[in-house]
Length: 95
Image (tube, rainbow, N blue to C red; front, top):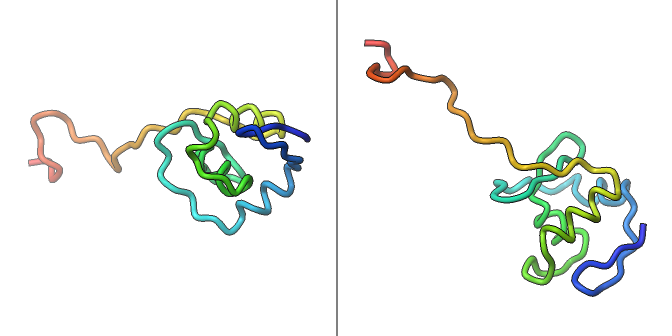
């Protein structure tokens, strides 16, 4: 698929994006996220890897459009949840 990111044309293929991200460790996601092969990445991290451009050169919206057109699921990151919920007024030990 041909797309323009930060005024540069790219020919992106879903399998090539998956291959490019296969050896990359996902960073903590602060903004928009994308799921690639069961792992959640920041769309900006994916954009930096596949375009080899600085993250300041493109927007998350540009990357979201490109990744969605390729068939990836873009979404808001899941909120961090504690291992267990402690009711108000109790300590973690239950005393």
